[in-house]
Image 1 (cartoon, helix red, strand yellow):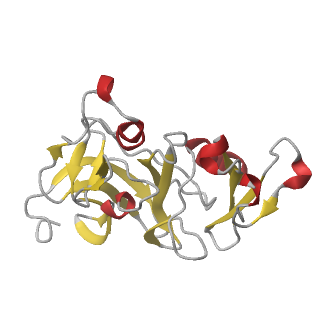
Image 2 (cartoon, rainbow, N blue to C red; image 1 turned 180 degrees about the vertical axis):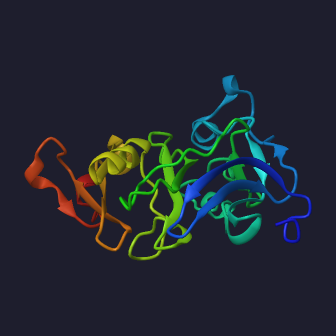
Length: 232
């Protein structure tokens, strides 16, 4: 590993079971991380700061990878800064509407905790908090781990990483499905949205989205993306 990361700093590491042996999953900073400095004092936070900084103030910032090792040999590295580039999840990246450098933002006390999210009987996935949008009303978590024998994030059919609330992931591990629901009135066009995640037979996680103008009426929920009709 030192050949690829000569100046690496390991923040956390755990042993995980693979089919043939036991490997190590580690959160590695490619270079020593620096303290996040873009967030103002919390008493001065704007609504944008609340979305961008909640859970990330005084976090460590830098280039971070989740790496898979076997007997100190690097098998695979998965860059985490990709989760902090999306406009919908700007935490730590965009302050006052300005795009910053594309870095990962990880709390300095974060430690890897293993989950069995795909139901394969091996706890080999971890969760990362990557955003608070929209309007700081929903904490987004992504899952990264061993999906179909390689290190990857849980992804949608379109290829994007699945980002849902923490409770949805915990319910998925416990029951095989979980959901996150968002209602934010006029700010979201009076549209309620629900994201459902479920395990599938290939050892992966599927995501489906639903929306409605009347969240208290179960029969009105429609699958797919909102068409803007709720605000009319």
